Length: 323
Picture 1 (cartoon, rainbow, N blue to C red):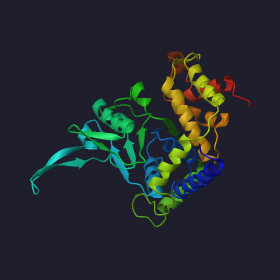
Picture 2 (spheres, rainbow, N blue to C red):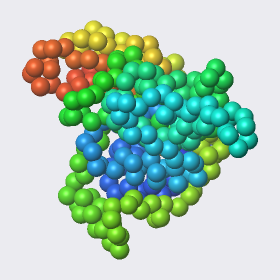
Picture 3 (cartoon, one colour):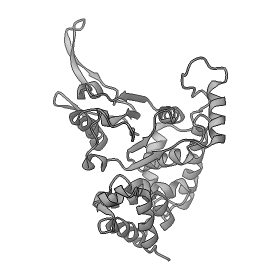
Picture 4 (cartoon, rainbow, N blue to C red):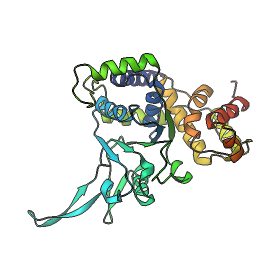
């Protein structure tokens, strides 16, 4: 079990990591926080939002702050699995075959517009997400740890896309919504980006390395060993089960949703420097865990109801443990 002293020290290190990334990523603190929850829970994150809101900057800044390797794949309709995973090629100079590893061999991968690629390419990415390895010509190659896939979808541009099936979306631990910054944050961002800069290259020079990749793996282990009371487990399961019968929800979250909610709540607690999980940890991260695992009914969609509104109603009506 993780002790209270270990949890407090972990919380301080994570706070330093958030501050370091925040020097380059202006605003979007909730997005950053939830992304780190996904990282320390050992899961992957699906970000949905408009272009140009800082997704690439976020992942590059995270990679720099922990000394990890950054990779990026721009998904397109003609993208093949070998383009992201790698392939075997013949080296004429050495007169032998060798494996050319693709961009998925990194610590932090930005999969931009994942729903623009065909299903077989999406499946190749999902293999490395789920198994932590890549299969090339029948041979398996493990990826380094920590490993975080940050996939993005554009919610308004649907032409020429291959929407992720519900079963594939379920493989992502969290679905994070990114929106426009407020006026003050946008002014600060524009001032910072344009100061002494030529072109629109991302500047992450202000981000200092505060952790090592091995320390991220250690913090993931700390989160996995946090104390969880049986009443908290029951609370998380009751929330997920309620989505299966709630009015206006056509398709509720499955058992994987219950597991994901508890994993994310553990990471949430660790980020607050606690060695135990509270009902508030479950509540704070529930929307990000469940919004891509439920589907609203046609009537609710016609009425313009939002998934987060319905989930908020569920959380209000599921009694939290008191002791």
